[in-house]
Image: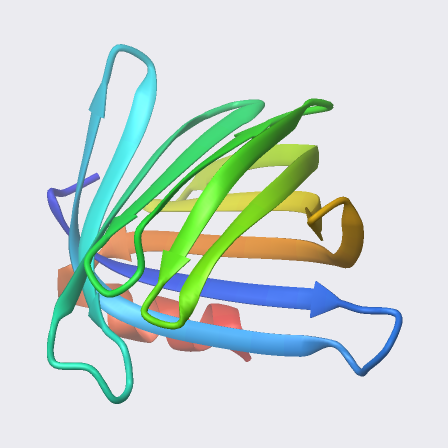
Length: 152
């Protein structure tokens, strides 16, 4: 795969109190592979803030790591069938999160990588939601069309 990519990050949360919540962003980024790990780097701007948040996703089968630095600061480790803790720092306050990962799956085909992470999220020992993150990575030169077809 090429270095210049488009990154689609789609998050879905299933809460007992409300309908599923869906969030999706698409950004240009960079991709490389080193020592069996895939790396994706991209910047995002959150609505209402001027500061950029820099994102790094590092993953291989059964494991994914997400780091955000900027408006939001967090390091989240997703290891299949394991529980990890993380401090999620926002402009509105910090939260301690428990992340219990139930699956980390990678599919590579046709110049595209699909990463799917399923996990349970809790804060202060109280269950919040079951979550799924789907990340699609494809070459920038024809990525727009590929992502449109995938997202339909």
